[in-house]
Amino acid sequence: MSKMITVKDLHKSFGKNEVLKGIDLEVHEQEVVCVIGPSGSGKSTLLRCLNLLEEVTSGDVYIEGDNLTDKNVNINEVRTRVGMVFQHFNLFPHMTVMDNITLGPMKIKGVSKDQARKDAIPILQKVGLEEKADVYPESLSGGQKQRVAIARSLAMNPKIMLFDEPTSALDPELVGDVLEVMKDLAKEGMTMVVVTHEMGFAREMGDRVIFMDEGIIMEEDEPENLFGNPQNPRTQEFLSKVL
Amino acid sequence: MEAIMDSHYIRVLPFLFEGLVWTLIITGVGLFFGFILGAIFGLARLSKNKLIYIISSIYVEALRGTPILAQILFIYFGLPDLIGFNIDKITASIIAIALNAGAYIAEIVRGAVYSIDKGQNEAGRSIGLTRGQTMRYIIWPQAFKRMIPPLGNQFVISLKDTSLFSVIAVGELLYMGQQYYGTTFAAFEALTMVCLMYLAITVPTALYLRKVERRLDV
Image 1: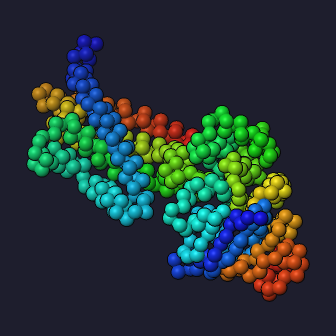
Image 2 (image 1 turned 180 degrees about the horizontal axis):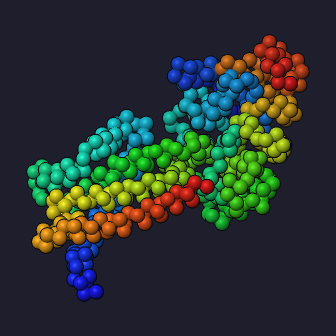
Image 3 (image 1 turned 90 degrees about the vertical axis):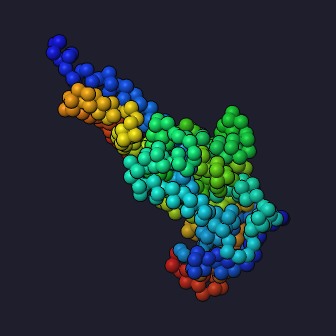
């Protein structure tokens, strides 16, 4: 299987504070990689470096072979292949659900309005919100908003999806719907990197789980091994607190 | 009835209406260009480019830090010495309003754009929109809504500022009132009517803005 993401010796500092201290990572096609770890461990920063929402301080990030730190690589084009879902949804509040979803295809890919709307319908059905097409985000619940955000990313037909704590801002009873959508995506073979506190999801859906702490990858393994028999004392300590 | 019709309160009106038209033209055209300047310099003040930031900051601080009366005198009397030709009064007035209001509008624009949640920009960029597209389709429409109340406020301020242009004998509202009592000595009547005319524009504007503000609040 081909490599979708390759990260080599990635460092990221905010001022004098070094948040990522040398990350190496490979994600293959159709793989679901879950990143867990305490807050402040750098897991969200790592994710945001994968589509260059954060500039990298040193090291390399390759998406399907394109080096994001190479000035000749068109980052906007790369981002159309890498969808991202945020903790706080970040839907566009002045647009309807439909307009949120069709904006990218229309403005970036030049798809006609009619075609973009037609394409959006099966995506909305996939996230279970086809009847919400014409409402504004403010009238949606958190879980619905997050599913719209997933649909907005999917409309660009990405090869990779990044999830940054997608259920952390949701009321507990709304988490399930969002996780269901993510599971469907994983089963369809989407390549996914998921920063999450949902250990159940990581265990069930992850092909690989990465435990991060203090800006480095402390341990990575298949979920059965990492959750069942963690080797690193930091992993053991973290899991004993959250499980 | 005849006494009222013959009073200075009424006889001054034709002059004042003429003045009011110029006041509104100067304010309207001036603010049109002022908004363009304000949008450009307001966005420039958010730029990461040091030079662009410095230039826009100099403009904003220079215009906000000097009185508009000095600005109009500078444009009308001072500038011709430098550029070698005269500027007519109305053009000078429009330039003064545009430059002066532009500086304040730049701050309105900067504040409104800055107030939009950073996540909006990230969401736009993450689907592959360019910086410009993200500004145009996502940030600006949301920011513009927040600009409406302060822009209305700026309209009222600039409208009143045009009265200062009476010093270069622009035939705006106050100047026309002054002309009237200069020959008739009916200063009380003329200035009462001048003030009522300003209020006839500014009060409804203020009331309307309060309504808009309430609607934007929800």
